Length: 301
Image (tube, rainbow, N blue to C red; front, side):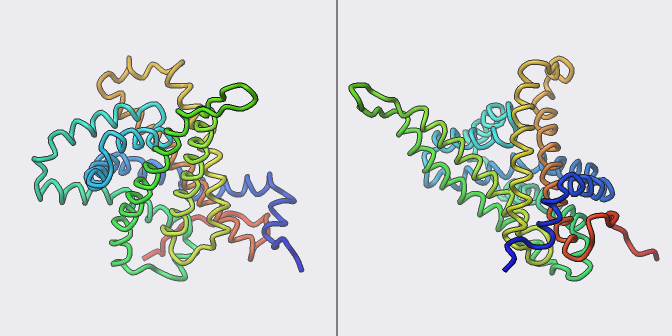
């Protein structure tokens, strides 16, 4: 019984060639252009989506604890800019009584834009799947709202778990005639919780957004690759914003928006690059590692 499939053997035998093939496929599919579109619409969507999520969850969880957890979660998505976003969100919640049906409808519309564009970008990356099977437009219309609901439930769970871990960090254990603080252990567990949540979100996107059923193994492969690259990039962004960046001097009042857009574009690039890893891994089952990339094309009319 063979433990490794043919694609896995090729990747392990020639990891450099597979990485180069993935980058060529990403370039052929105009990956940076797709990432820019996803980041732009994510910038339009993130605040309305957060407002709707917090308003809904504030009926079940203390608002201060919810905003604190949300700030920690946003630090994984927009490093260095979470405080500004949470401050704007808290300011809106103070005046949420003026929320009318028109504003609610517009927020629902804008909160779904990023998912719609992301689905289209995934269709380009997985164009070999689209050619075989197309998704019904009603399913595409429902996916963004179902996914927002799922993210809201996930945020509720993270809020409860993070609160428990923070409470544990304030405790001490008496052992060997000394008192040992659990703050360090709590910090490590919170970091691992965030990293696991990051992999979970990437995996769920790869399972839901592409047309057709993607295997969990392939989705995890792309999610781990994207999460590891994002962790390196996230810490690099924090270091850049705190040491070398003069973005505040150049852009002034637009600093937060520009910094958030830069973070979202980098995250979108790595997200789509992870999708390209999955796409190329799937193609290895029927093609050799030396096969050229197959960019997305449209039929000539």
